[in-house]
Structure formats: C-alpha cells, structure tokens
Amino acid sequence: MRRLNLVKYVFLCAICVSLSGCITPPKGFLRPSSDCLQNRQLQTRQYDTKDQEAIITSVAGVLQDLGFTLDASETELGLVSASKNADATDARQITFALTADILSALAGAHSNNMAGCDKEQKVKASVITKPSLDGSKTVVRVTFQRIVWNMQNQISRIETIKDPEVYLKFYTSLSKAIFLEAQKI
Amino acid sequence: MKNSKIISLSFLSLFFLMMSAGCVSTTNKAFRCEESQVELRSIQTRAFDTIDKKKMLQIIISTMQDLDFVIDKADLLLGSVTGTKFVRNASIIMTVTVRSRGGKQLLVRANARCGVTSVKDPETYQDFFMSLEKSLFLTAHQID
Image (cartoon, rainbow over all chains, first blue to last red; front, side, top):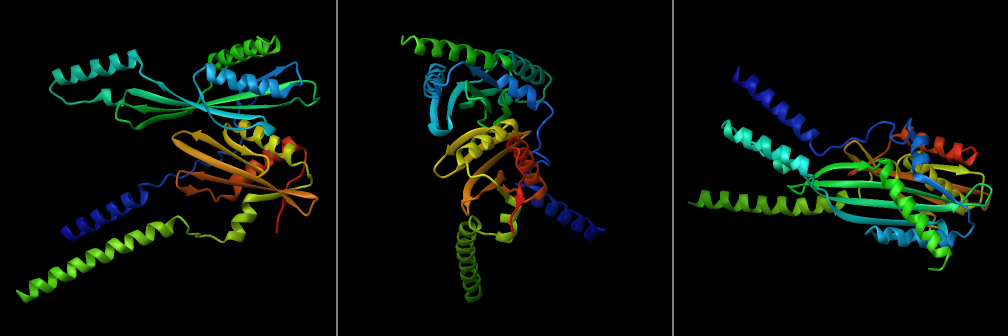
C-alpha cells in the first residue's frame, strides 16, 4: 500500500515538473480576430497631405509631448516606436484590497490583497505612416500595448489597449501638431 | 576513517562534476536545434512573385497590425520587421524577414516565439501567410 502511494507521489511530481515553465503558444494566434476591422478603424486616421516627412516628424513630437521616449524608428517605412513608464495605482483597487485585508485580519485570517494591486505600467506605442492607396493622402495607424506590474513587482497583466479615448487623445494631439507644423509655429 | 574520507571526496568530486555539467548544458541549450532546419525553413517561408521590397514590408507591417501586433523594430535595408503580441497571459514575439530570390521573387520568412518556446506549428504560419496573401492580392508559393 505504502509502495503504491510512493509511486503515485513520484508520478505526480513528474507531471508537475514537466508542466512547470512550459508556456504553450495558444492555437490560431495568427488568425485575424472578429473585431479586426473595428480595431483598424479605431487605430487609423487619414491626413490630406502627401508630405509623409512632416507627418512622421509631428508623430515623434506628439509622442514626446505625451511623455514617451523613442525606442526605434525607420523613416523609410514610416515607423516610430516608443515607450513610457507610468504609475498604475488605482485608489479604488487599493481601498478594496485594504478593506479585504482588514476584514480578514479581524476574522483572524491572514490575507495580502494589497500585494496584488497594480503599481507600475509600461506603455508601448508603435506608429506607422504610409501613403494611401491612391497616393493622395497619408495614412497613420497607431497601436498601444501595456504591461502592468503589481506591488510585488510581478507582471500582473499584459494587454493591447483598445480604449477609444486613448486613441482619440493621441489623434487630437497629432492634428494640432500637424496644424502647428503646417503654420510653422 | 578512511572510508568516510573516500565518501566525502567522492561527493565533492560529484558536486563539481554536476556544477561543470550544468554550466555547459545551459550554454548549449541556447544554440541547440532539435528539429530539421530544412523542414522548419519550409514551414516558415513562402515565395511571392514581386520584387517591390518596400511595398512588401509595408504590407507585412499592416498585416501584423491587423493581427494585434505592436511593431517594435523595422529595417528596410535588412528587410526585417519585429513585433510583439499579447494573447491572454502569453507574450508572442515575431520577426518577419524579406529577401530577394533570383531577382524575380521575394522570400518572406516568419519566425514566432512564445516565451522560450519556438512556434513550430505549420498551421499557425499558414494562417499568417493566408492573411498576407489577401493583403497582397498575390499567391504565396511553397518553397522546396
């Protein structure tokens, strides 16, 4: 009987070891998602100019205005990629975690919800400018991603930002910058 | 007394042997190729009947953006694009390279990694090339 338990234990250990550190890539991750066209619309704007250089210069300026630092660029392909570290603390999340911790302490149990609260985030932006199909306009497409760390400095979330407000803010700033650039202000 | 000395000495030598063996194996792990290079290359590569490298790279970039990738780096001269995509809790990094083949075609090679695991699934790459075909209005030819 004891021998059987030992065999079970060894078998379980073997499974655990084989599973640990093994991230399998999700199936079909290179297939377009159902909201692909919607995202493209959200992320893209057209400007009535053929001057791609002026647009890409304005893009770099806007990213700097928003506190990003430029990581890489390839002007021939119209690419500018940038990143920014920002605070990710959320007062509501902290209040909720703190209340849960206090309540469990009062009940005599130990919990540490505060450790799971968001602390810092890194936002990555990538902007592509290219001529439109008929060549009379310039198309700009921006995409944002973010990595969030919790209070224990562990990555708690990684995601593509799909909040329309973020894109609206970027394009409002870009339109202003292009106008200022055009007026040579 | 003599026995215990022998035992401790053998343990010590075993320890050093394990230490040195560990060092060698981790370095080699980074350069190890388990699968056939020819097979992997054929899974990851397609040929297209065009010679416009810049247009090809621009379309690769927009296809990758449609697939939720954020473009990290690109180089026209080298013909490479690198992007990152987040799927649930996995971070996928993909590099696509474009090079000329015989002055009539362009070879496109996609290479994806998920954490430390290299993606070797032919269907996944087929999905990517199907999207690329649609954007290019060109047929992707399987290479030998």
